[in-house]
Image (cartoon, rainbow, N blue to C red; front, side, top):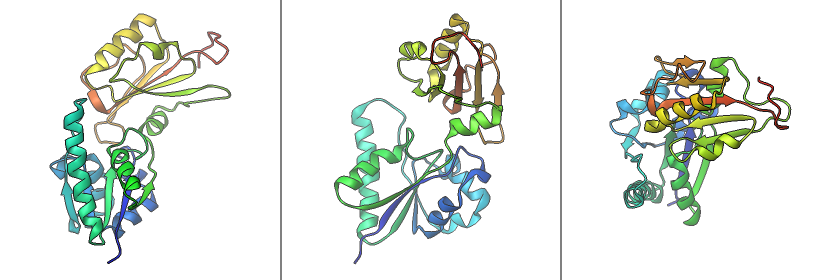
Length: 238
């Protein structure tokens, strides 16, 4: 029997209309749908797809949560469980669609699984989705980069001190409980051009146009965008 294939499918930031035609096609072709969350009703990627293609409920839905922790042992255990389930399905010829919010190449659970697929010579295909920070910039009506501006994508749940030395545009993702610390630092630096979007693409989407406005409790699904100096180090604001 021919082995199956794993599709890593990015479905965008949460707004159903931002799901690409290719992503939807691969979902429809899949025999099984893998969700890194449980229950499925709490998976943003699943709910987004369901809005545009209700028939997803007729698929075999497999929920295997991936913990948002730094404990290496817990992470490895979760990865092992997910990988084994996917591997078993591929060995019987199944096409497996692994749904991810945003793009599967940016801070995605799928990336850990893809590496193992590659090492074990299993077939896989990665389907790009609209990144949350691009959707956030569009929602705010701002650009991320102009002329020679650099764009830096920063995981704000880790040490962010060094990022303040960067010029251009800084995009802080995955803030979680560290959002309060990020807000405090931005206020201390007197950064004027601070923007943010929480729950981008979802019904409760909210916009912020200064560090003062940032809701410290908005958490994991908040994208913070800081547009500071030009490449030359001048103080011109954008």
